[in-house]
Length: 551
Image (tube, rainbow, N blue to C red; front, side, top):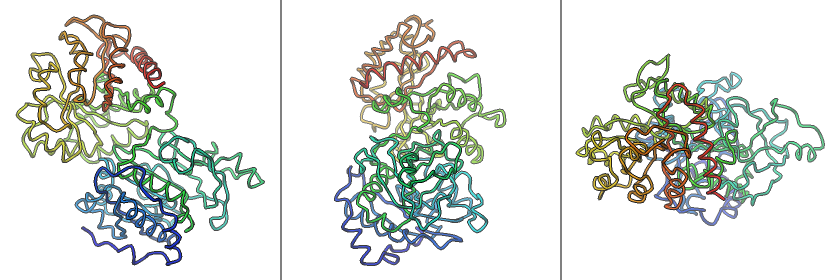
């Protein structure tokens, strides 16, 4: 563990601390699922630092102590990003950092893998230019950090944090906006106007500057910093499994003795730590159907096997073209023309990086991954789970030897990754083909081991999907959806709702049972090279059913 600097060493003045204490939230909105640890990193390089940073150190430390939501550790030692040190934390808060904080490639890789594998990342105000060479005009030094955070830039109006704007709530019902009671608010601060890679196709904007209301307030037209005049104030996103939050309002010390802002930042911290669920699908991808699915806790994505005649990069492109934000991976699919290798644990760190960047560029997130038979040998099993951690995978779909499950179960719990046992027909999947047989295998095991019902194989094997669902109940971890033209071994895929599979009734039963699978995997195994119109029909059907169920 790297040496840390006790927060009291740089604490605010007593009068400031008294103001902070008076404004602190009384309690956390949700109880932590386990003791949480927040790393606050407040180093600046080539810049003197914002005076508000030390006040924020105090406010966050006291807030964690008072509410019991987390324990804060403040550091400015880059060694804290060694892997064994970093893994002790649930989230990292870059507190108003400016400049190139550290250049060690190993430490940078550790941070990426920490976030992508499910850690939290928070940034405020000056963090938008962290890992830039500030004395050289904020020259970019780590583009992937900018992608992960969701932005670059620090342009603002003249004055020492004195611009007054109207902040609107882009997503009034979002859990992180709870402190503001669904209402826009006036605020005085230094408001940044960002440039690429910021995009509403990348992040979920929850607050932004209300340009028309602000022009009336200021009594003059606003300076145009962007062609689209889109000036966000706060957002959330996922980077892989990582929960990312950025908030611009943090320039002035008084922000951190403002009761509403402290409540806002507490809620943001609980989101980043993993205790407060909050939707993150990018603003630019939101539709009424996707909002309904967020309400249901459902996620619809493409299984890569649907496009296994293409590369994984092409599958990502097609998924985005279809308007879906999620995808499942496949171990025997080529990555791309430039990376003519299978998408599997043998890929290099740089090749995995290219996959991360491709997913990010198209606003698609990898949720599931098919790996034929996860091995029972501990070393080989760890290799597979390390790969899943690096790629932000939530759930494996696999058909391992049942003897391997004792080993697999240990890694499921260690890595917080599920294994959903997939079924083919009886001959290929003697232990998993039937719901009754699968339950026997799962008996007494971690809830992280369960079922991935492949409805196509169920129907071809004479298993009614609704009865199978009722048998498995909460052992269902993820679902591969199909509808077939007939309930025989020769049945082939047809658009959902047009076949013999009673797809609408199945979805209603999923909802009735309260099952929230990792993903409804759209696996269309027919007309391989010309399936896009049929897939679009499946999506339209799923959207219609989910909107009706969410009413």
